[in-house]
Image (cartoon, rainbow, N blue to C red):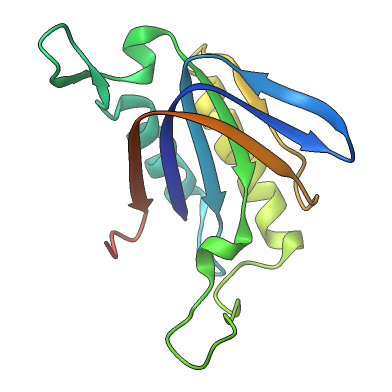
Length: 149
């Protein structure tokens, strides 16, 4: 699994003109599921995100996690994180999991996150969405459960 994690002041998702999800201070997590991902990948990524110390203390050092601050998370599924652009000009998505495989793993990932007790908001799996982000910093972190980067 792969994730783009952004520290935000606020964020929201719009689908067909409606806004089904929004958060205040916390993290936006764009998550992609690969064809070879399993439950352990979802658990690893959830724990890493919840405990990632990317919020500043009074001295400006990254010493606090979203859990420490009781922040919120907006999680948006994004298969395009598995786009392979090494050949040609059009990304290949052959490494992305099919929706029938990805949806249960995405739901399991959300369950792992929700065990933290933090508020978790989501987009709609497979929907075309607009994601609004007021990035704080900006701070953007790339994660991969297979540790490829």
